Image (cartoon, rainbow, N blue to C red; front, side, top):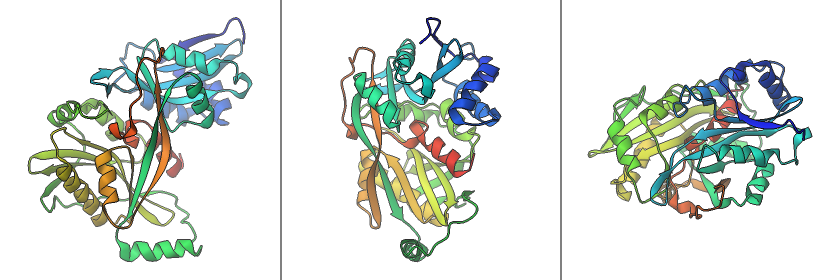
Length: 360
C-alpha cells in the first residue's frame, strides 16, 4: 500500500462528500448512492450511542487514490462476565478487491479497538470470518433459527403446494401485515406501542439481569432502532402477565405467498421465571395467529425461547449465523452460546434481510 495510507473515522461532512460516494459506487456497483447514504446516515449518524460532537464510527482506510476500505461499528454496551464492556458490532466491513489481502482489514479493526474494548460479529462473510479467526477471535457458536406453522388449515395445504413445485411467487415481494387489534390474550394484557417512552423501569430491570450475557438496551436506543428505522415498520408489543412485563418487537409481512411473523427482539427482566416466559411466548404466538401469520419465526440464542419452540408441534430449528468476538490482546475469555440472550435485532442482520425483502 502507499506510504501515504491512513485510517481515520469518517466525519459527518465526509459522509455526504464525493470521495465517500466514489467508494460506495465501487463497492456496491451502483451509480446513485443517495439512498445508501441516507441509510448510513440513519444507522450511524442518527444513532444515539454516538455523540453529535464525534465523527461517525465508520473507520476508513485511504491511499493516494481515495478510500479503499471501511469498517462500520455499531456501539453496543454488552454485559459479559459480570460487567458492562464497550463492545461494538462489526458491520459494513468492505475492502475494494484491489486492496484485499494487504492488511487493510486488520488495520481497520486495530483502529476500532482504540474506541472499543471488544468487537463482535454476527452473520459475517467467509472472508471476514477467516480474518477474525486469524486475529485470535473466539468463535462462540451459531444462532438458531426457529420456525413454527400457524393457521395450519391454510399453511399445510400451502406447504404441500410448495413441495410439489406448483406455486408461483407473487409479483409483489414484500407487503406489511397489520397486527391484531385486540388487547387481552388469556392472562396476558397486550398493548401495541408507538414508541418505548415510559418503559424505562422495564429496561432497567432487564439490564440488571446478571445470569446471562446480553446487549444493553435503553428507551432512546430502542426508539431509534425500531420506531425511527426508515424501512418497513416494526410492530412493538408490551405484554403484561400478572405484573411481569416484556417487550416483543415483531416484523409481520407477506413474501412469496407466505404470511410470516418474525420475532426480532424480546426483552424481559431477570425476575421473570421460565414459566412466565413460556406464557409470554404463547401470547406472542396467539397474537401472530390472530394477525393471520402462517410462519412464526425467530433467530436467537435465548435458551428459554429455544426451549419454548422445541416444546410445541409443527416446529423446526436450524443452525444459522456465526457469533464471534475478540479483544486487542485476547484477554476476554470465551463463553458458551447458551449463556447469551441474542436476537437478530441486537445487531443489524434483520435490517439486511428487511432491505432485501422490501427491494431497497
